[in-house]
Amino acid sequence: MSLLVVGLSHRSAPVSVLERAALHADAQVKLLQDTVAADPATEAAVLATCNRIELYADVDKFHAGVAELSTLLAQHSGVGLDELTPYLYVHYEDRAVHHLFSVACGLDSMVVGEGQILGQIKDSLARAQELHTAGRLLNDLFQQALRVGKRAHSETGIDRAGQSLVTFGLEQLALGAEVSDWARGKKALVIGAGSMSSLAAATLARVGVTEIVVANRTADRAERLAEILNEGGDVSARAVPMDSVSDELTRADVVVSCTGATGLVLSAEAVAAARGSVALGADEVPPFRESEAAPAARQPAGSATDENCPLDLAPMQATPGFSVLGEAAVAGMAASELEQHAAWVDNAPRPQSSGSVATVLDPAEEAEAIAALAATAAVIGRVPERRRPEPVAEIPRPTPSLFLLDLAMPRDIDAAVHRLGGVRLVDIESLADASADAPMAADVDQVRRIVADEVAAFGAALRAAHITPTVVALRSMAAEVVAGEIARLDGRLPGLDDKQRGEITQTVRRVVDKLLHAPTVRVKQLAAEPGGAGYADALRTLFDLDPETVAAVSRAEDSTTDEKDRGSS
Image 1 (cartoon, one colour):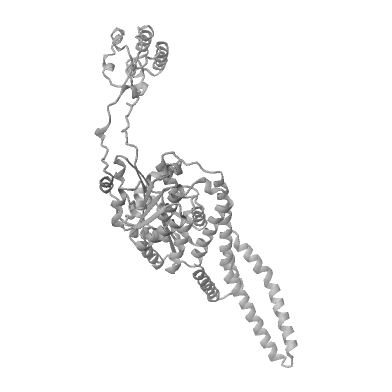
Image 2 (cartoon, rainbow, N blue to C red):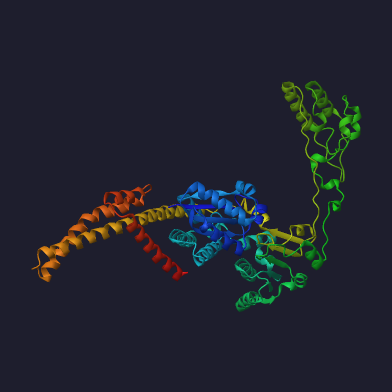
């Protein structure tokens, strides 16, 4: 096996790089064609989703294959090779199989356990079969990956570990509320009618929106999706052309966009015009109120008594945001000075706080803290200043009235939309950040065991299949020897009748079969084990088998496999 995968995903590259490297349908076709035309590769398949781009190939040389596949990815993605290389990962042979099986089970997804990747793997295989770039290796690999993914979802609770990207995105829009409560009664606009947009529309219908408008460049697909939604009976759906999006924005509460467009579908200006929103600027920060400040930043009452302090604290009094009685005031003092200051704090008169005036720290507690600093200063000389940062007042945002979910790669919706008042935007980048700390279900470990078992079984089957043409060629050679000897016997014993000749022929064949049975069964077992590929070469050498005969058997098997795969796709 010489399976090689070179790719990048949300785990290896920032969203900005994934966005630029995204491959549209025509680019994927050209990439496949150029890959199989290259010297190291004989088969190729592309798995391109919103958060991964991977090129699978059967290569005869590892290093040359990595170089060629990396170069092809850079050429067709439009991202320079030098810029792309730091984000690429490479998997070879069993590790490549393990990677694809993990992807199929949702273990490598942005939202662990999501099942949409199975449909994307199926589409990738169908595309490679249609272009005749998938041979026996990739056909077997991708079909087995689909079976492994289905097994993981049916035998474990991996679905509980995560949801589809659509559901996760809606949860982010809902800001912690139940999605069904948040969505109830809302009107939705879905831009695009592909698999992701269709899933989004179905999900919105399920969680309780009252109306869904589908906009797509191809009217037939939008109308078909609207018909399917209406058949459910729980939502009113209709299709509109893409040039109606601006008008529909004025009515929509939720917008989900996932198209194959290479540029923006919704600009910040278009959203602002449709909703009458204005951008929030840095100068719109409201006045900072002392009641909202963190306790550490408040000026304590009784600062006027600082003039009675035996130390010169005037420089520190001019520093905003720090207590002249606290740590910032004494930073850099020597131990003796700190002790004097502690004594003064402990005995200084303190006025009572009232109303909105900040609470004064307990004198005994502050004196104790300063004494502790003095002990430290006695060891290291002087206490370094450790100022706390000023509290930052957040810009108050209006309650969102328009919720935007951008699931496209590259993005459909201008990122500047997040600065519009009353608008909340969730996109692939924010979903990646939000999912980084998502809890993993216990079922994930069970899925990993399934993947490990399936990888071992696939490798064993592949290695066993590798020796099959040699075993078939050996048995064919033995059959030819038997036929030749029976023909020679007919010349020497022409008086044999048909019954006698048949008995002799059957006896000779049984002898040959018995002699070959044990070694051929055993060699298949040995070949299935790691490192067993050399047994085929040994068998060919020991029996002096014609390499062309073995190759002819392999071609015949591959041809049969290709016909079967095309018939089932």
